[in-house]
Image (cartoon, rainbow, N blue to C red; front, top):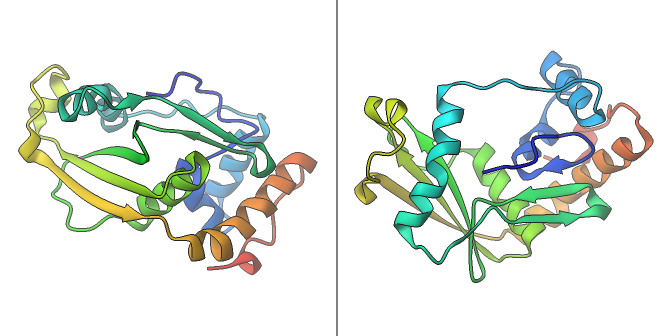
Length: 189
């Protein structure tokens, strides 16, 4: 659960897919304004609230030894990684979903790769919890471990070094200089 909701000045692991976006879109322009601290993004919905509220409950049910809510900084890259859970050398990312998942989305795979880089982990588990209508109404229902779908993800150093980091470095440079990033397409993927 994120305690500091100020999303300015840092690129979070959950922002990773924005590095692969078209900088000419309204979505990117709004995101960049948040990063510069010009506006805040207070958007929320029942799905986001449920995910935030259930995160600790899911982790505690899985294993009470999981360390929660650790934040890692990589200032050179302006990267701030707020983790859901860490267990020894394992990064754990929790997502809630209203539909069964057969494979991780590219957005979440990128987030986990960035999270492993930022937290200096080599392995991760991306865990989806299948929600039903009653879960959105009552966050205190027992967690059903049979509703968890776990994807084990290894750190992809080739992708991190050759695709992700060139974009992250460029965005960090733009953020420091407070200039608009226009050259994302030339920076990989």
